[in-house]
Image (cartoon, rainbow, N blue to C red):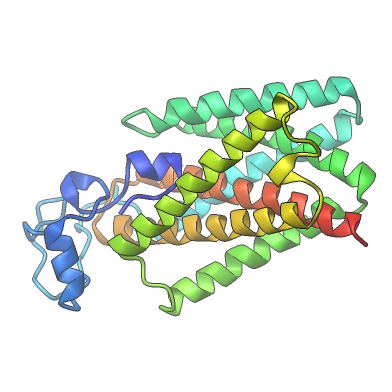
Length: 286
C-alpha cells in the first residue's frame, strides 16, 4: 500500500523489508480477516522480535522507536514552521507583482526541497523544515492575494481544511474506511488521472487553447474540480494515517516520524490550497 504522497509513495512504514507495500500474502491475510497476517515472515521488519500469527504486532522494547508522540511533535513543528512563514510573508510582503514573483520562487524552492527529501534514503530535518518555511512564504503571499479580493477566504479555507482533516480522521478511526490494497490502487488510479488531466488543462490554458482557466475556472465546473481535489486530499490522509499506524506498530525508527510529519504537511497544504480556491469560487458566485 503506497500513499499518493511523494514521501510515502517512495518510503512507507510497513512490512516488506521496512517499506510499504501489499504483496500476495498480505492480501491473503486481509481476505482471511486477519489484518496482522501481512508479514509473511512473521517478523517485525524494524527489529528481530517475532510477531505471533493473529496477534497485534508489538514494537521492539528497545528505545529509539517511533511513537505517536514523536509524530505529533514533529508534525506540530513542521506545520508551525509553515504557519510562521505564512504569517511573516503576509505581514512583510504587500500584494504586488514583486511579492507574487517571490511567492512563485518560494514555491519552486519548496518543490525542489520536497523532491530532494523524497529521494533521500533517510529523513533530513533541515530539508523538511526548509521545505516548510518556503512553502509557508508561498502560502502567505497567495493567501493575502486571495484575501485582498475575497475578504476572509484564507480563514474560511483554514477552517475547511481542519474540518476535512478531522472528519477524515474520525471516519478512519471509526473503521468506516478500510485501507486495503484494492482501496489504495483504485484511489491512486483516480489521483494519477486527475493530475494528468490538470496538467493537460494547464498546457491548454498556457497556449490559449482554452480560456478562463478551463477546468480550473471560477465557475461551477471549477467548483466541481475543486471538490474532487479535496476528496482526493482526504484519500491521501487515510493512506498517511494507515502508514503511520503501521510504523508505530512495527517499530519504525524514531527518525521516520520526520517523514510522517513531512507527508502530512504536504497533504494538508494540498487540501488548504484547493479549499482556498473553492471558497473563492463560492464567494465569487454570491
